[in-house]
Image (cartoon, rainbow, N blue to C red; front, side):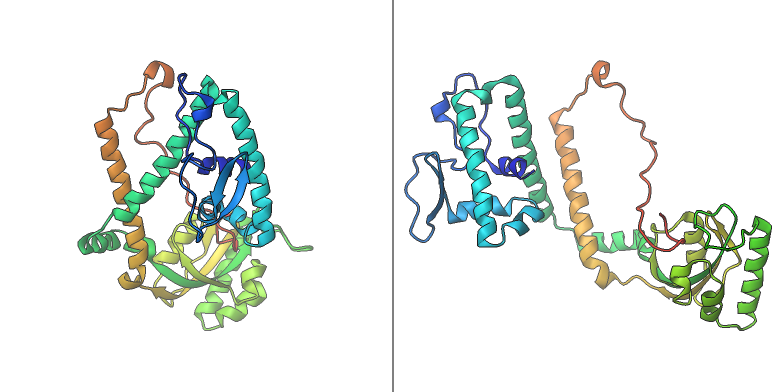
Length: 323
């Protein structure tokens, strides 16, 4: 894994049948024959006559995945990284001496790898240079306001026979009708003044939230099963729902607080997302100009524009949350 990551940092040689192995740039040192580095940037690594200065080595390190960077955070880790890097350089030099970079399969891999690195760098540059206007940010906020809505809520679950939630040892299996009747009874007790938290602790089959008085914390859209999410966001603060049926059973939901989205707090997230959108639009414009074509005989017809949207993210939590 580390080897692949290290290779990805190297400036790839453009494969050509006219290139001589001796003229190939090194995995480590792209400028053969360059002047000696200044004393302030000493050579810290040499392999097969090729060198890396401290700055060059740290650039290689900075381009690695987070896990590899963490492992190389100590002098021992850096030495272990350099040791593996030495193996890569020795093998790469031997591969060049044998002309492997000019074989069709390897040349294709090198080009794909080079293109991937350059494309990633270009896209990051497009993101960094994108400058959403204040009007665009506010328009995005208004369009996505419901997405940012949050509620603080709690619930009581009455498990039904066949529920995805496993029954506790010795727990009676309730039919759908029995579970619904119990849920209505619990709601009636709460509406008449009983403390919701006390009822949840005593009666809820969701033990995790029940121990906290049914508290589910702060909820956002897209992280709950649809029936439950609709009930939560349809309620006003202080309201208690009628029994809500899900694959777990019947829920009594109570919203304690609705949190209004705040533009100032969300501005950094909106700006980040808009920068990415602007970059994507720029890429689309580049594609339009580049006259991209696919051979339908080989690739088949283009996908339908009304293809199913990806599923909402799944997150761990109580039975009210997707699993």
